[in-house]
Amino acid sequence: MKDLQPIESIYNLIPREEVKKSKAPRYMSTFKESVKFEEKKNKAACKTMGPAKVDVPSPNEYLHKHTKELKLAEKSGFLDSTERAPRCLNEERRRPSVPLRTDQPLMGVQTNKNFINTNVAEAVMAVPKKPQPIFVDSKRGDKHHLETSGLVPKYIKRKDYGATPEYLVKRNEEVKRAQEEYDAYVKERLKMGAMKQLSDEERHSVLEGLKKNWDELHHEYQGLSVVIDTTPKKIHKERLEIEMRQLERDIDLIERHKVIYIANN
Image 1 (tube, rainbow, N blue to C red):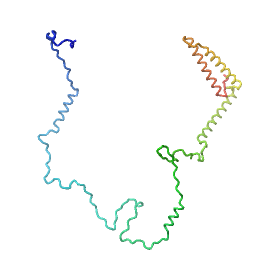
Image 2: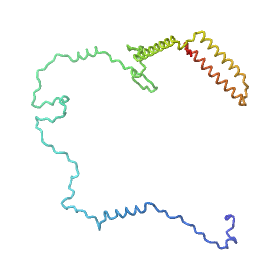
Image 3: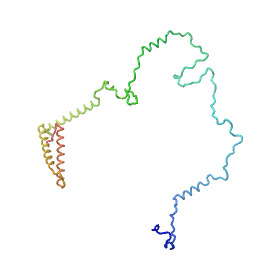
Image 4: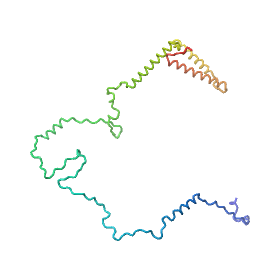
């Protein structure tokens, strides 16, 4: 509304009280006293009157020429012409020393070997070097060794190729032994009359009865209404699904196991 009023208005003639804005309280650090104490404590630690008192250098100790250049260490002594400095600490790896100027070379050593014919014979009898097998895996011609690539069937040429590992043989023996012990225990219990084994006819009849019950439940399930909007309908549908699922588990159990034992009690 103030912006809509013109500059010259009768309301501007009324004197108004000047409103002073109140300032926020000044921030005071909580560490003010500790900072003051530390400042007063270390204030006069290095306090001096005038320039620092340092020893004045002597006029005789000035910088001489070439004093900052690096110098090699002086040798402890000179070797004679007959002495030689050791080059290697290992005596076996040390090369033979250079013969002295006063040593006499071996004279009168001769040989009848024809080096030209020998080299020709060695070149003729030499076996040609076979190229190393490689394979290329890119259009730029990147080469790799074929033997270490895993593409060479070198493992089928081993003596033990195709043989059953020892740990598998031991495991099969242990499984067979455990199965034999279990069969012996079952036979013993059968003799005692604690369990009864179902015959093939009984097993087949039980399996057929379970499948017939499942067919009846499935026929009833297929006859349910499409829209299940009441609680009794939902409960009836869930009961049929649970019974059909249980029958499916029983049928699968009997089909997977050919031998079935039943306790007499």
